[in-house]
Amino acid sequence: AQKITQTQPGMFVQEKEAVTLDCTYDTSDQSYGLFWYKQPSSGEMIFLIYQGSYDEQNATEGRYSLNFQKARKSANLVISASQLGDSAMYFCAMRGPNTGNQFYFGTGTSLTVIP
Amino acid sequence: KAGVTQTPRYLIKTRGQQVTLSCSPISGHRSVSWYQQTPGQGLQFLFEYFSETQRNKGNFPGRFSGRQFSNSRSEMNVSTLELGDSALYLCASSRFTSGVSYNEQFFGPGTRLTVL
Image (cartoon, rainbow over all chains, first blue to last red):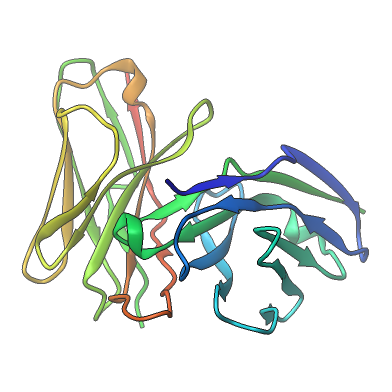
């Protein structure tokens, strides 16, 4: 079965600093996709970044990058130059073929950016 | 391109009643998934529909049901509401996934259900 683990319930970062949010996963699939979502206090889930298991390079989207270490089964999100608007819950997710491409989400990390 | 829309945004019901929530996916998206989010249980998968067929189902009682129409719009229904059903219900849509590329889900704003 697929499993996503986010071990940091809460994180604090100084404005303009970089922060890493941890995500580890467990799957028997050889092919799978990894995702990060942001959920502000308004409740809507916002897609941030995607990494395919066969992608050789780490994904980047603006200030977001995904530190993908396949052998360690980790997919950490790095946010550079944190902004106050980055304060939100962050969820790591995965989907793969052996479970019908269903999305599995972690429990989330609450990030607070301090001015 | 319009995003995922959900109606209603807020709903207050009493125990024992039933409720129907609606979700319109992004144009061209045929997969629609539903999630329940509560502070205690986090984000829990309810079910996924693709081309009017339920493709995946989470671990929820039969009081939770859903369907998808030919235009990909989806509804979920909760019968005999319980206090514990109070939650944010999120709908998400995505394109069909094939091969080794996995499409992201795009979420709607959610329906906040309060059961009194």
